[in-house]
Length: 222
Image 1 (cartoon, helix red, strand yellow):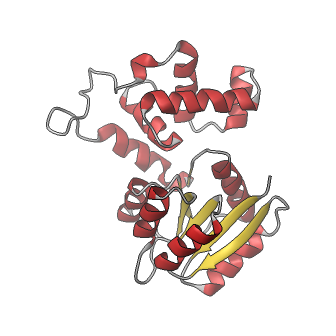
Image 2 (cartoon, helix red, strand yellow; image 1 turned 120 degrees about the vertical axis):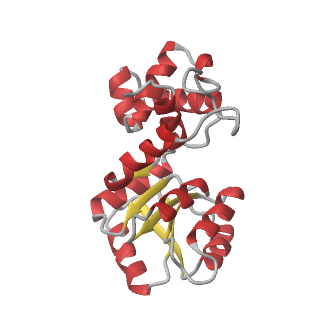
Image 3 (cartoon, rainbow, N blue to C red; image 1 turned 180 degrees about the vertical axis):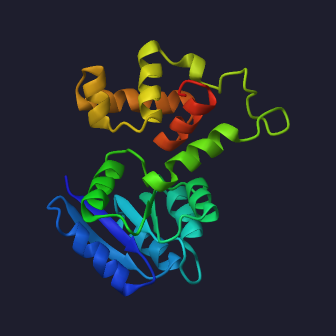
């Protein structure tokens, strides 16, 4: 399967560099480019890419709003790609529905791997921000005021998981890929994907990142 990618960045040189890195992979093809958020949304509607690499800071419609629209319409999986790892960008784009966050300093091999993983239904986070995302999820206020579960109560859906599905959730929270899940569980990669889909459905999570955060809040991972 060829992974179809849309590049959204207001700097032509950046787009050219990203295209050059992605063109090294025979199973990845860049189907379009956009210089701002509005164009990214329009091109996503027209091209229906598998993955959108989205710059956060762009003129007019920024990357966060563009991500929100693309995700809401189911036009593709969005990975934020930015120079700055500021919390307002990181958490803003993840709340908008992005399934990944990478820095523009990422190498070609890591970028291609991230695109493949996202196209396969996984999520990706730059190592520089992973701990901050998990720490924010664990320390988020909980209680009756915001409807979140208290620390003594497991998040909704956790009690619906089978023993095997809890094992899958813990592995997700530790950042394991589908291939690594399959190896750890001694099953095929297809079966591993099925387990992940069931876990997400029972937990009411859209992405693996949401499930990982939930696992940490539930105390399943320390």
